[in-house]
Length: 368
Image (tube, helix red, strand yellow):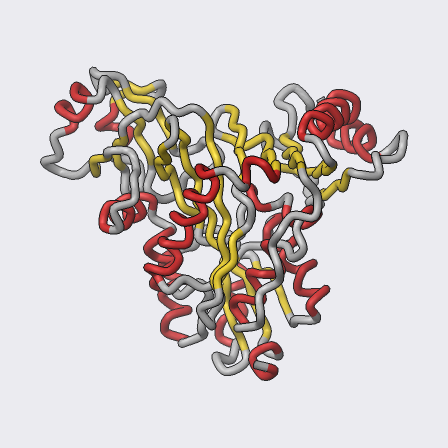
């Protein structure tokens, strides 16, 4: 195990997830580097399969780069096979069907597929890109006549990778379950949380000990564990679900550390980032129980109307001290665009109402 710990870990992608993985690696004294996809291409010939491990910060990796990594025989976590299955949302749907895990009815948009009957049967549908979509992008509502906000279904789908239709699910709320499975087969669960979305983008995650101990939350944890075990998965895996009464329907799976698990940095004994690295190296996994009864994680999404970076950043970081039960995580980005995730903060305490109130006050006074 000690020799494994000395391996250097490289992550494909150098955004905020890579940044937070790097911080966790520093605490664990693990050699680590986050690479842009171009940097990965450039340094791949120099990596030694005996001393390196590769992991993933994002699903949007060029197929040619993945093929080169496979040829290099550099080990990955999750495995290349698991990653390839889960980075394609259409293949995710097929996997869920095989595992008899509830997911919305779907139909791949392929030659000969009976799209009209699917749309009539379900009174419209959602069109999704199996690959390439994120944060509300790559998703369209389709009416019974096959029209979307951007034109006809058939034309739009021809421009997408692995497009498919799925039935619209009328749900009560969204939740997420994050699980971590190590190379040794050890598995731990993080508390299931409620995920609040706007225009397909998560803007807030809410944790309460009461919800995490509910039957619904435990059912979500069991589903995420079943997916991880079925794949022999290594690392952190996040499952996003819809709550429909007392039942759950899986929406999507992320083969990586995930936005819904950011609260674990400040609220859990061992964060999702630390355990992801531990899992890949076969180290014992850190405990995941929450150290506070409640928490709110709020994403700092760049306001569409704001054009000046400096003034809003100064408003966020200057002025009164932060509340003692709040932690800010800034991602170091300076390029702005509407709804880009620039950072997040977590508020924790004894009551969710208090956490919500503080989060709203901070957003109103320092960001909005």
